[in-house]
Image (cartoon, rainbow, N blue to C red; front, side, top):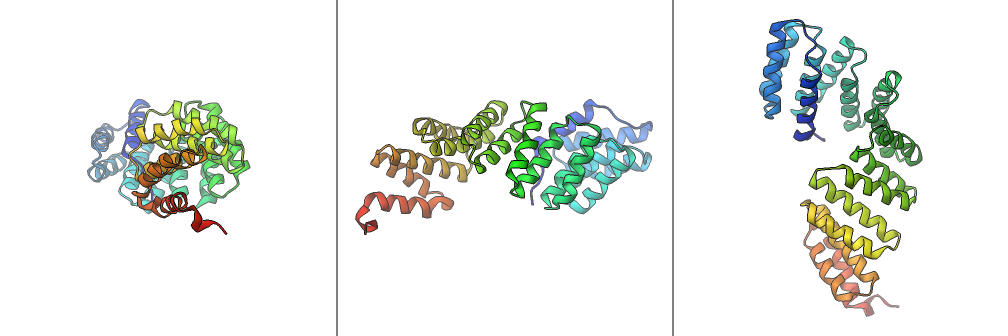
Length: 289
């Protein structure tokens, strides 16, 4: 089950501090601040009782419910997190971040109908919410409703042009519908929008795959090499080397192709496919009728 990455939580926590506390109780505010400090450090187990203390001092402290829910989810206590997010929404009917967090949790649990309802609840009072449009588009993509997903994801990037995850999802959906040029543009926008190296590597890898399909082999070569530069993921490293093998094979560079496939073969997920391509290049007579 997916956990919220720590760097994402730090951004959420920073936002929580920026918008201020919504409690009138000094006791609640003090406990909340202490909980935030611990959550920033990744100590969610210790943060939970402090957020609970804040709520006990002020049962209408919506922000404390929200941060408690995020901490519970980080600790994989998803049932409690679900209830806590709903309580935050009960206290504040237009608490956008709580709806999004609830929808994301429901999506991770594959409760897609409920997650779409949560995202649509946001759109009922904020029809420019990029996160809500992304949430709906992501669910539609998972349900293989690619054309509908594209419409929602385009709205997500319209309202937040630097939303790299939305650009990436849009590219994936466009690739599924064979809109390859558009997919390439979306992956390029994802690359430009992210500052995280691992994501940049993933986006370059996906761009390279699209460029191969478009038979833009020189561009694909550059993209796969960029993927290798930015990513340490075993799957991306193996996939990028396999992609380079495909590029060199298409360009008639047999030895370069073999070298690239051999590198891909060192990654377990790519070994079978890479070994087959190596054997095909080294022993073509085996595969002729």
